[in-house]
Length: 415
Image (cartoon, rainbow, N blue to C red; front, side, top):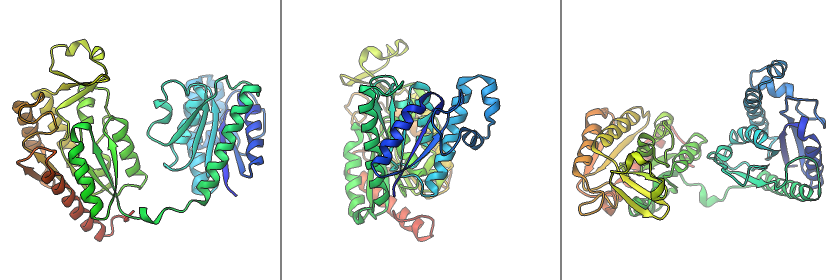
C-alpha cells in the first residue's frame, strides 16, 4: 500500500492534520504523521514525535523550547524533519509528502520536502502560496496549493481545500508507488544550458546528441535553471553536461537577476562527470524592465531584449574577472572536461555588427581564461561564433567521446 507522510506542527495545526489523515486513509493509503512542533502539546497523536525530529537535527527539544527563539526552533526542526523523511524514503515508507502551514510552517515543511529527490510527490498547502514561492520551492518539484483562508480550524472553505489536497496526495502516492520508468528513457542523460541568444547552438547540439543515443534535458539559464541542472546531477539523474551557456556567472558577479549563486559551475567537476563547457552569453548581465536597472548602471550599454528583460554588456574588466572565475571552477574538475571557445562571438548579439560586439571585452575574457586554466583542461578554439552549427556539433561529439571513455572505466551509469 502506498504511504503518504504528513509533516507539520501538531501543537497549532493538529486538528487540521487529523482531518487530512482521515481523508488520506479513506483514499486507501497508509499515513505516517510526523510532529515538528515545539510549542504546546500535540493536538493529535503523531507516529513520529517531536523529540525524535529534534534529535535527528542534533538538537535537544527542551533546549529549543527554553530558548524561546522561534527562528532557531523552525530551522532546527526543519533540519530534523528533512533527516526523518529522508530515512522514511530510503526505507520505502514514503511515496508522497504533504504538509500544511503558514509562513513559519511552510519554511519548516518545505525544507524537509526539498531534501527529497526530484520525482517524489511533494504537496504543501500554504497561506503564502500566492506570493513569492521561490524560498519554499527552490529547485525541486514541490507543488504549493493556496489555502485561501488561514489554516486555523476546519470550516466550509478549508474543508474543501484540505480534502482536495488529501485526494491529490493520495493519487500521487499511488502512482509513485506503482511507477515503472518508460523504456525509451533508459538512455544516458545529458544536461544542457541554453539562453535565447544561444538557442541555435544548443538546438543543434541537442539534436546531435539525441542521434548519438542520449536523452538531453535543456535548462534555461535564468538562475534557477542552472541550480536545477546541478541539483539533478547530485541526485544522480544526469550523467554528462553540455554547459554551453554560462551566463549565470555574469549575473552573480555584477548583480543581475539571473544569478545561480557562487557555486554555479562546480557540481559536475566535483562529481567527476564528463563535461563540455563554453562561454555562452557571458557578454551580458540580465535585469528586468528598463526602469528596474540600478541607477549605477545608467551610463552602461543596455539593450532591451523584450519588455520584461533588459540586457547590459559586460565590460573588459568584468570579462577578465569572469575568465578567472570560470577557469578556477573548471580547474577543480575531477572528470573529463573540454572548454570550447568560439572566437567570433559568444552570443547572437555579440558577433560583428551586432549591439554587444566588443573585441576588447572578448579579448579580456579569453586572455584571463588562457592565463588561469590548468593544463588538464582541454581547450578547443574555433573560428566561428557560438551559434555556428559546426561549433555545436563539435561540442556534442567531444562530449560523446568523453562519456564513452568515462563510462567504459566504470565511473557512471548509462541513465
